[in-house]
Image (tube, rainbow, N blue to C red; front, side, top):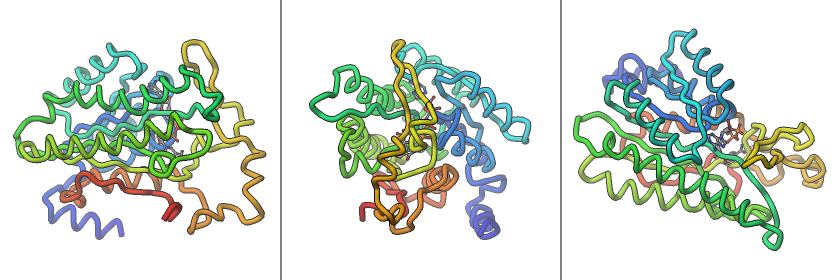
Length: 287
Ligand SMILES: NC(=O)c1ccc[n+]([C@@H]2O[C@H](COP(=O)([O-])OP(=O)(O)OC[C@H]3O[C@@H](n4cnc5c(N)ncnc54)[C@H](O)[C@@H]3O)[C@@H](O)[C@H]2O)c1
């Protein structure tokens, strides 16, 4: 399979990897799916910009890629801060010697609650991080995408089955993750015709990261000093019934590498005629 991909890549004149010479910003790349996207992109010759609020883990990911012969730059910061968005685009463009080819809007977490108990803070934070941040990042990067230099340009927004189908307890997250579907389609329609920019949405199902690990493991994020616990309560997982993952035809969750591979597939020239689409990476869930 790898040989076949390498052969196709060769035919497409990308001799040093599917993303050779491209500069990619990946948000939320300090761990989980984003870190895998960064690793796979770097393996395919991209210069990757690791954007994440966790500075220590961002540096670790970048160091590992650089020591393995790839090219990575950690630009840590909080995407909810407008100054950071400006800094990120500026530093990415400097790193890319004036070019940015790919943005993967992947950063995020969940802050669940039933509708009647959901606070404004929970609502506003999810809409801001999963909806407004991708828009602001793309707007800030416009000068690097609205150009005609014959090189590929690609925006990938990460969604979720919760966005496409709804999910009890996630009205805030579902709303924001549904929103990026329209965001991708609008970018595809506005920047496709003159500049050849492709924009797609990838919606994940159950992928094994700290977001889907047992809540009891204690992972959390802080929002304005408030601790938000991450994960799914073990009890809720057990209540799913005797057959594990009955709702998933492949009967298992996906790995971060499998999720990231789908992002690489869409970013690569093998998908050069795919734009404005929403691709579900779910092991068949929600057919
Ligand atoms: N894991 C799943 O099952 C699943 C399913 C559907 C969608 N998703 C989506 O995939 C994406 C990646 O999630 P993951 O499972 O890898 O989670 P993760 O927690 O492993 O990684 C998310 C990263 O985003 C970063 N981040 C969060 N808030 C940030 C902020 N304000 N500024 C900068 N960085 C910030 C975190 O520090 C973290 O490193 C998210 O958008 C998530 O909603 C995940």
